[in-house]
Structure formats: C-alpha cells, structure tokens
Image 1 (cartoon, rainbow, N blue to C red):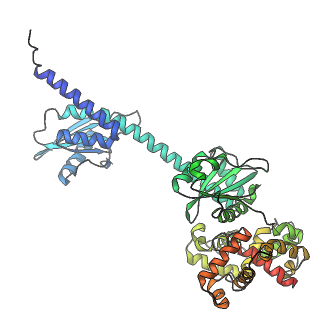
Image 2: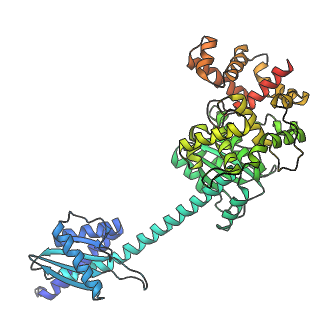
Image 3: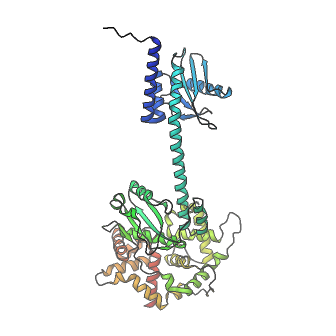
Length: 491
C-alpha cells in the first residue's frame, strides 16, 4: 500500500485560504458586515476598520481602535484616494496599514477596508483583505438596499400620515395634492378606524390595510393608538383586517360612520367616541352610535349664525408677518377645543404662542376660552360654519339659537338615556353640576360632597350610557353642554 504524499507549502496555503473564505462567507450569511469584520479581526489579530472615503466609520469597528491606529488608517485611505488606487499600504513607526476599496457599482463610492498591524505585517494579510473585501461588498450592498427600502417605507409612511393629519385639520385641497405625489387619489367617502393596543398588533392592522387606498397614521399625543382612514360607503363592509387574530384578540377599535372626505375631522371624533365604548365591549370593537347631529337641526339659521359669529375671524388680517391671520386663528381654535392638552404640539408652536393666540381669539370674538359656555359656542360655530354664502344674522347670542323647539327635541333625544327609568337619577344631576362648573372635577365634587374619584366614576357611567367620551379628548362636553342648555331654556 502506497503512502499518501503530504501536501507541499503552496497547497497548504491554498487550502488555508479556501477555509478563510468559507469562514468569511459563513459569517456574512449569519451576521452581515459586522460579523465579517469580527471574523477578520480574530483571524488577523489586527485593528480592522471599515471606513467611508472621507475617513468616517462606515461600520462600528469590531474591537477598540487606538488613536494612533485610527489616524494611520485615515491617512492610508487618504493616500489611496489621492492616487485613485484601489489599495494602498502606509507604514509609520511600528505600525503598518493596508487598505482595500470594496468592489462597487460604477458611480458609487464604496467604503474602504483597513487593517492596522504591527510591523512587519503578516505575509498573508493582503490576501485576507482582498478576499474579505469581496465578501464585504456583497453584505454591504445587501444592507444598503435594506436601508434604502426602510427609508423609502418611512418616507411613504410619513407622507401618508401627513395626508391624514391635513384631512383632520380640514385642509382637504392640500391633502389631495400631497396624496397625488404617492400616485393615490383620496376617496369621496371615508370611514375612520381608531385602533388601540399593542404596537405589534397595530402594525399588523396597518400592514393589512390596502396601502393603495388606506391612509394610516399615529394619533398625535397618543402613543398607543393608530388611525386608519379607508374608502367607505353605506353598502361597503367593514375592513377585513378587523377579524385578524392579532387585532381582534388584543386591540380595541372604534369605527366611524361613512362620511364625506371634507368631514374627516368628524369621522376622527366619531371613531374616538366609539373607541370609548369599545373598551367596555366584549368584542373589543364598536361602531359609532349616531345620536343625531345638531348642525342639520339648526339648518340655514345655524349656518347664518355661525357666519355672523366667526365674521371677525374671517375678516381679520395680520398686522405683522409674524402675527397669525384669520385661518391660523381658526386652526388654533379647532386644535385647542378638541385637544387642549397638546394643541401647541399639534400646531407646531410654543405654548406661550398658543396662549397669546387664545387671548387674541378672546379679544376678536368676545368668547372666553376658559368658560365652557363660550368654548361650546365656538365649537358649534366651527362645526357648522358655512362658506360665507349664507346671509349673516344679527348676533343674537347662542341662547336664541338653542331656544328653538327643534333644538329642544334634539336635546331630549341626546340626553334621554340619562332620564330612562333604569338610570340612576344621580347621574343626570352630576352631569348638570359638572357642566355648570365648566367641566371641572374639583368644584363639582365639592358641591356634591363627593370625592373627585367618585365624580370620575359617575362620569364614566355617563360615558357608557351616552356612548361618548367625556374625560378624554376629543370630549363630547361641548355637545352635552348645548343639549343641557337647550333644556334649561325650555324649562
């Protein structure tokens, strides 16, 4: 039997190189660029860096790198760039640095692989760097593609969220123009879903929404809530993603009525009121229970009254470029009425600027933003304001409008659940006292000789009976004050 001859030195080098390449490729498959750099540093015992052509880190180094080693690596990268060479070697004192530019597509500036080792450098270091550069070019390109795709998704998500917020602010024309940049047309009729629950479940709902037709965004000021706006019609079924286990088992969902696109803000309020009901519903979701809107009841007289009430704002012109004009004050009023806690954040202004604008509103309209009666009056005017084609009525005040018989009928229907035979009488009395105290818990509790927590519990039961939110935005307190005032005028 003949003995197998031992491989010579050159064969051993080829075998060792093949093993190194396989190890680097395996590291790249497992952990990408960072894993390849760690494997190369362990194999060479050198300080390994992946640098941009400018000398900045393209990836965190796998091991700590000293000041001298980093300075030498940057010098070597600069030398390679100056000579327009793909590789370079620079020695300084007791250190040697080898750099190899990663292969890249034409027109791109790929990063540079650098290894700093004590002099003299290991003889196999140039070959190792060349092989590692080939592997790193693949992992780097793949990671760059993923990063670009992630940035594109973020940009798309941000634009869709901006469209949604513009619609909620009533800027429909601007929202349509922005939507067209995504090659999407906004529907004429929409339905809003307010989804509250774990982040993973809300992402599932967002991902399963049809990206071409749904507009998804975060609820400003509510980290655990996502808004979904979808095309809707009276005959169109609810979204299919509502039945997905991740959503149905862990999320609460409030659903608005189908509404015209210009009424997206109303759909938003309806969805959040329905969400209040969904938190107590065994199926964890609830559709808006329409109690009847006051605006159609008021008819042309209401539109004319709103025009007269808001006329000072419509005619207002800013004295200085930095001062708010009429539309800016209208947007401020809407944001503060519906989301007083974070109105400044929503408007992108400082809280002191918000306070100054509210003072300006008070001066122009004669409505005190700190009195519930005046806030309800302004909210109603903003809700039913016309396009200016109605003939303004003399400013006869809110009581003249609420004293109409049809308004009293609406108020009876709106508050009827509180006066049903099985409803505790204390609830209607508590609501009346709370409204008379400008919706403040402390004075209400003091008058009723109750603790603040007891008043909150009663208000929570009122929320259940009236299917609306009182203690959290967007609150229905303005609507309930109008109903309560209409019945007071009748009595």
